[in-house]
Image 1 (cartoon, rainbow, N blue to C red):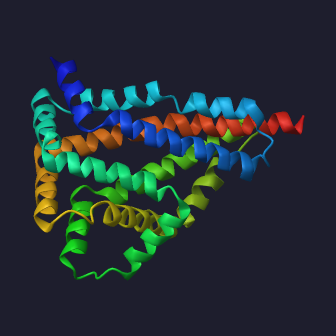
Image 2 (image 1 turned 90 degrees about the vertical axis):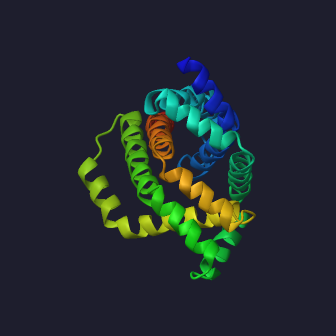
Length: 251
């Protein structure tokens, strides 16, 4: 029965589509790393390694495990009811569509410009801000990004077979903490304001109300836990792949 409720919630959240979107982002990120850090010398071996790292099966299982371990059966059923509703499906569709669109740098810049120019006293902005605060999205994304970046650095150093100064790396990351937090906040608000623009104030309030329930809080925590564990492993392995390619190039 537990597996059935996991399947039901995963289907309501369209996790397979989410995984597809994130994998596409990961493959593009791998191309950027090849260009910026390896001067396009990674070749087929590096490309294949990136594809292995962003395994749809691994990503899907990571998130499904989080839903299984992070929520009770009753909470999974309550969350499923919300996301199976017309509003819940609309929210998922809007988020996925915006996530695909904002991966285009030009679209991202337009979304950021709209966010910067937005009326901070408007009901829409205030509701998005409340949604962000209720779900602790800035802090959760900020901390997850820091850990992922550190693991990437660690993997890259170990992949090269070199010694890295982890203390210096941590100090450097913390020295830029304010800028990184601001960057996280800007991206998050730009994305959410782009995604949720078609929703009414009543829709937003209903979504926020669900986020305040035990099921909503547990789902939010479970998904962050699943994403964090997934990205920690993938970023370490990605850094290791980059480091290994660097070492091979040095030889």
